[in-house]
Image (tube, rainbow, N blue to C red; front, side, top):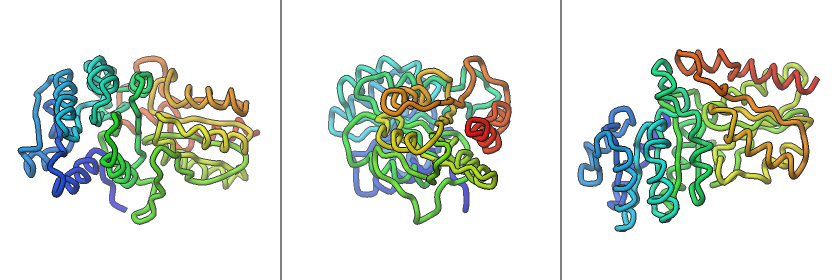
Length: 310
């Protein structure tokens, strides 16, 4: 199956919807190229706004358009969107309950060699802490398409983080289980529960296959909906396992691991191990090199799971 970057799929899905819905507006902060939104800007110039490198303006303008009845999609690198315009995201979007979808592109360590200034390893924690702000991290382009279609049907604020590069799909064309705000069960097992989000879901799925060869049964949950967290799915997976592992392209504090541990600790105590980026500037390299270095790959996840079970 061909690989398509999630950001490209967001553009394609919005372009398809914009054929009949003239209220859809895309906004970029000098990021139409890096965000794969040049086709949208070229096809629907009257539904496109370029703010330049001004993320705070980007979010406030998006909120203003939303108050005028538009469906605003603000596209900007996640590292800047989640930090430079944090107050605008909190006040103009979430507190004001505007129909703005914040699209954080090139999330996590997608920018690789550009270093910590361009990495967004704290955005899950930051955006999830804002009341009335939903946070989504789809795992592949197929799930991304379903998510965008669902988001077009509501008028609530949301932050969607996607990576920069095309990734191997987790699902198959025509077979993409999706329910809004519900975790997707990739596979079910009885020894260990692996809960992942974003680009970590495919390695988690592959880790389950490795564990199966070792006689270890693993549940894998695709928690694309980081907020609202599907607590019921977390509890069910934890109750049927001896231990829980969370895997995320994020710092160790305040992200998926912290949320899952909070639920498991209060509802069905089990040992919870969080596999994440370190609490330090990460090494320089491509996403794959960074993941491999920190064990955020199928082999690393399988090794950690085997250690826990045995």
